Image 1 (cartoon, rainbow, N blue to C red):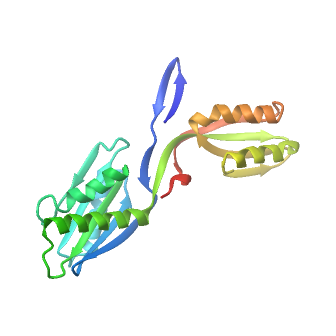
Image 2 (image 1 turned 90 degrees about the vertical axis):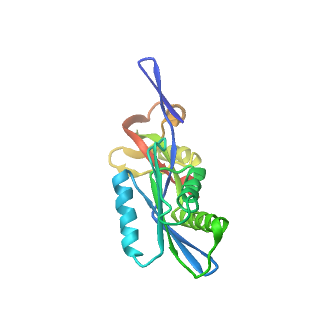
Image 3 (image 1 turned 90 degrees about the horizontal axis):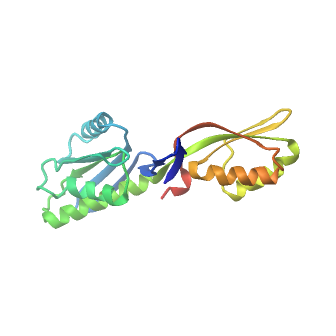
Length: 224
């Protein structure tokens, strides 16, 4: 969790998990097909539009069961069994999302009936597993509050700075080589102080470090 101190007060910026991209997965149980489609969404309107698009795509399916979560603190959750026995579809889908800790995500699991009744236990298992498959395909990432920095240095310090950034697994977003060298980076807010200290010491205070922006960004190291 990132923390900043302003006017004597500490502000906290909690990280949160999201799906990295749209994804899909499939599970079969006694010839019934369960197709899970997953998408990142940022509002209830986006979630609703996604759900409707899946229903239109799979218009001939017996059921299209949706669930979604919206908000950094998962303030809004919705799910529907779409005609399946109560608690056997929407809730299991939602439980998978809650267990994974993701938010700003919508899922629709489409079922094509295979001719054999599965019972409540079979349905819960099938909708749960299909959702897990779709979530695995989409991938999960962590949104962290970070700072955008521009590091200005002399050519003699390029190797030192590149080594420090590399050792901290910090990617250089953009480089500019003119009379001096500038590197643009983005790091978690709580790491700014330590990095600034290390760069200052390594370059004998020649490095000019400027904060150029801030906000939430996707931590690629957390993809699963």
